[in-house]
Image: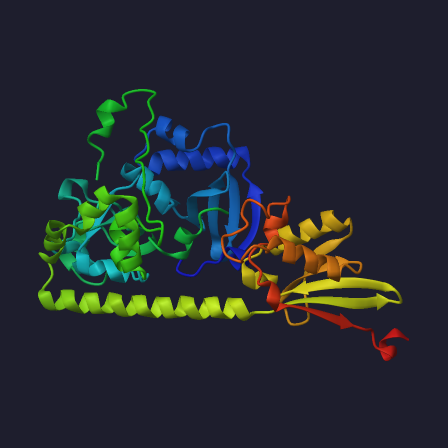
Length: 184
Length: 219
């Protein structure tokens, strides 16, 4: 999503978010992420109002004090930025990819099933299976921090069964152009 | 990776989970463990060695390297290494070319006759030196107490247009902002208020041009 993204040409406007919208975003974050209200409060205090940065192709980035915190594509799920995820790694469920897949992810590719099901990869156990369309943090084999954020295209149980084709669509990753944007 | 388990009991009530202190590579901005996938691996490595020896030990000690090798065949590993070396060289060459280009890109200060004895000054090419045009134009506007704006010219390139004939002053200002040896120097002294926005320009590349209105246009 952010393989190509340059603030000077891709941003069409910045507006403060209406308080009713802020409430909606807040509640959707609380319901979809694994986060408690206090932690969210620390990330985004109630009194501070966030800025909506509108970008091309219906991408919305929400910033607080010019720092991107969340983004959203169209009406889809709200993702944290990768820097935020690094600070609070527990907010998204994690999947792991093997070492061989890292460089493809860093080139912007989607993650294929074998990268997740192989020995180096990691998928949640059966009782914590994720359905399709879940935002996930992508960890890498032997690494401490998440390397990217993705959206599952099929359920994790299916991944194990089918073991072919795209499993996690990559949304943002270390070194993409959203990563390069530290201030908006 | 701390998962959900330790977080539930400890954050029983009203306590926000503190953020993980992140440390990023100063060269490529990646978390240091991903430097090896970047385009400046050897530089990152050096940097980490001087900045954070503890982390350097953690990521690049012999055991760590051995552990990394464990899951990859030797062939794949050597291929990967070759690839990164190649990528690195490429990125370096690219950066070099960009730097050279930057050093030789011209800045054109043009005095345009708008009417008899009325001029506007257009300044072009500043963006090549990473200057924020909007800030610079604002700076000119306050300095000269005239209108200054960022406009697109016929070729679609942004330029700053300042009302009035200020070409010499603009030249002096840029020169002053950049005196004391282009790179890094003059941080403290050249800091006459606001001049920082003009920093980075290679003064030798500044060209002064005059454009007279043609007779045919005037009538």
